[in-house]
Image (cartoon, rainbow, N blue to C red; front, side):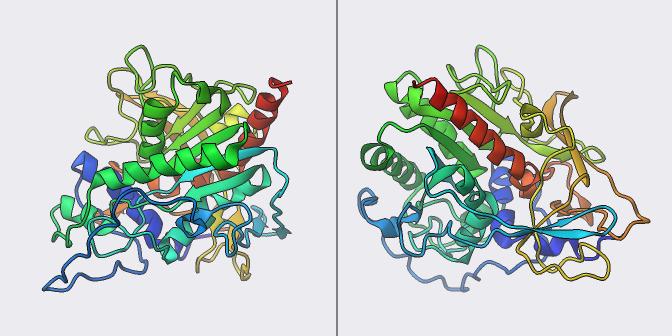
Length: 401
């Protein structure tokens, strides 16, 4: 079945995360999919308020999106999915978090802030809440969940870096670094209690996780508590001169203290020569396929946000997520100086299910080969990332006895 509204379910928040990479890569401005626009900047911008002075206080629960025991926790959301099979049949898939999960997950979200300034404040908007639901809350079936708010580079500032009008300036990149460092230190001192922890980040958040490992984990005693790091939508290199010096790449679901890293492109739209995602550098770019690590021969357990798309002819989907078994398959490939997660869509036009899942950045009316499927990097492998977290957590715990 033809997909009638595949881009409608891509949120402005996730599109913002893609703009981070474009700014760094000097890529052409993409055509955003239909989504709520960023707050407009007035022709005469207001004076930017002064940034929050000093370090952010992470003893204050208001500065966490997700924190065990917090009222109105952003991770306490409905994650029910509808399984849409190729023959058009559907089934409801419930979700339950584990309040007694034996391990922790610490997450840094991508560039999502719609604040009309260069650096965001610490007030969560719909965009921060949306990306938590899409990228992180599902890990609650395996982990206790920690996700700090932080003063990140905003979408408005990234647009300025690509030639748009500059928003009012306040603060700088150092605020984001300081916040993530402070949140991590507070977590270790007050919440960790010697538990194993998985670090998770996408796009700008993945860059922060990489920096955190480089500066505060590798070569230090706390490295023994890092079960793994899931650095998604951010290119890292392996080898002697690679990005991380003592963190190996995960090769099985029993490995711990290791790295999961990939960027995704369609098999029909491989990286353009100018693409920065997945590019080999001082060493080969890293690609780890979570579905392969856990032996998921049926393909990745993808979870896509439902939106207003028609996922199956003649039926209305009333859950926030859909799972489409067999619609996509993934594998890591090395081609033309790039290593990346290649995504194949197994469309069957004659059946009633949608033939595509969307997620492209569009330029001149077609998918931009410089971007790949950055918008849905995590959605593509979400179920397998969660399962991998559970298995690696069990392996780490067994080694502590």
